Image 1: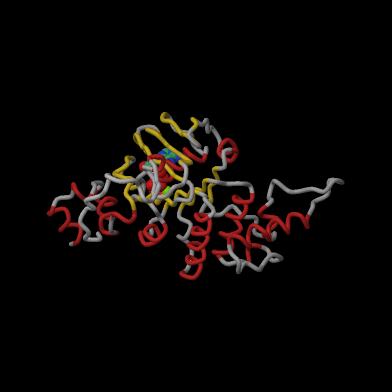
Image 2 (image 1 turned 180 degrees about the horizontal axis):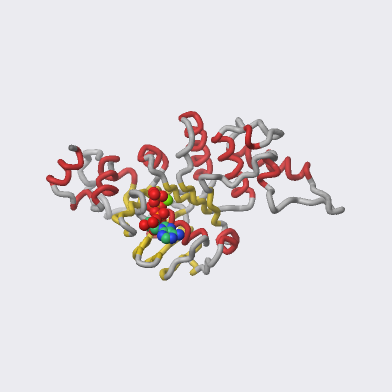
Amino acid sequence: MTGQSPDPEAGTGTDPKGGGDAAAGGTGDGAVLIEMRNINVAFGGVHAVQDVTVDLHAGEVVGLVGGNGAGKSTLMRALSGAHPPDSGEILVDGNVATITNPRDAKALGIETIYQTLALADNVDAAANVFLGRELTTRTGSLDDSAMESATRKVLRRLNPNFKNFKSAVKSLSGGQRQAVAIGRAVHFNARILIMDEPTAALGPAETTQVRNLIKQLKSEGIGIFLISHDIHDVFDLSDRISVMYHGRIVGTVKQTDITTDDVLGMIILGKKPEDVTQKELEELHA
Ligand SMILES: Nc1ncnc2c1ncn2[C@@H]1O[C@H](COP(=O)(O)OP(=O)(O)OP(=O)(O)O)[C@@H](O)[C@H]1O
Ligand SMILES: [Mg+2]
């Protein structure tokens, strides 16, 4: 809270920021990249995702938080094509999209960075960036120099300190491995990244590297859905935070409008701060 009283002039003059209604849900001027509307996913009797609506703008990080089993990964698997929703709509760039498998999602610029990173450990960064999509020369042999120079270009952009281009990725740090995985997505024109617990397995220095990567991606206009149990990560990196509880959305809040305690209350109690009673608040802090 800033403690400022409302601006008496608000709404009477022209908007000094020049922002329009287009970005009403978001925080910046970025165009709407993704709208997921009324998404439902059930596994037998388990309604993992219930009537969930979220959106994502260009250059924005939306933190997706909630307790274990709240439905975060299932919601993102609906977007990545790994497990399409039972009902609901997904719009990409304002158009209704049909995403029935990961290939559909990739074709729309939606890439997922898995916690396991899905890297080939025994080969170098370039081989990983182009894994399964290798560049070849006119004679049909692997074009190693083209792949290496493209890899240098994309990784320099993401992390200027990245130097280990000749090493097998198994010898790289967690943060550098993350850069390789993200480099792969970005080289192939990802505009929407889904990151599920990107820093869970990393130490402090590596976590800093990944945070810097996320900030760099943001500055390039990429939109990111960030799932994390680390409330500090979420708070430092997110423009907005969507909280899930037992498959439903509790609320989506702007990071600047809320405290970490408010978000923890939403995660644990499944209610917006204004709906939490004094008794519940005391129990939460007990
Ligand atoms: N493939 C599946 N088959 C059956 N049930 C599933 C499957 N995937 C998820 N679920 C169930 O759906 C619910 C939501 O799970 P999900 O993995 O989306 O939660 P989450 O918010 O990502 O949790 P966590 O923070 O533990 O990763 C849980 O009850 C889970 O057991
Ligand atoms: Mg999960």
